[in-house]
Image (cartoon, rainbow, N blue to C red):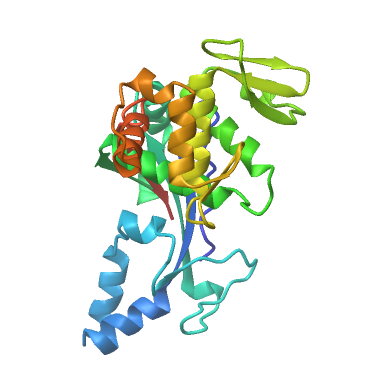
Length: 281
């Protein structure tokens, strides 16, 4: 029986950065082996259980897939655990859509359009607090950037600004952009001058913090538009720029300051809300 034609989802109505896509393969031969050899389930029962098997969100979105799940970009993949060919593999495409004011209308419209027959699409809602959503976004951002290429600093700044101001046409703003700088003239917002983008001090400080959070585990300190900074150096710069005073952060301990900075970012810019998980098989 030929496989069903893959139905593409139209996600163009969602603001940038609010949809994360995952593709995961599962080896049915491995599942059958686990059911029959490890769980001692009869073959006929095992086939029935496989048909009813529903992967969890963690299994489909985890960075490190475990048997029987795996990731592969090969045209004709084979199971890395048992060597089974493509006909024994099932593909799951998962789309994680963040909830919030900027996505609610588009989410409702998309859900109305999804076909209900044959369970081709399965929708699951996951409740997350603002901190969890923020760190999931950071993790996805870090995986999408090449931290060995210094142009990632501009890309990270853009992705943060897209989250902060989703209605702005950032494609146009960043077209042929060569540098992002702190503005000594602006008190808020941003402006482009030639191939340079100038950010108000508070906005530039937030961009530095995002860059530090993304890169701090990549090497010693964190790489930012103002060079590689340790936590103490980052806090010193943010204090000198007036950003900490603006947020009412008066603590001296870098660890306490860092915790309050992260909590502030996580609680702003509509990070919070439910996540809709749309899974296709």
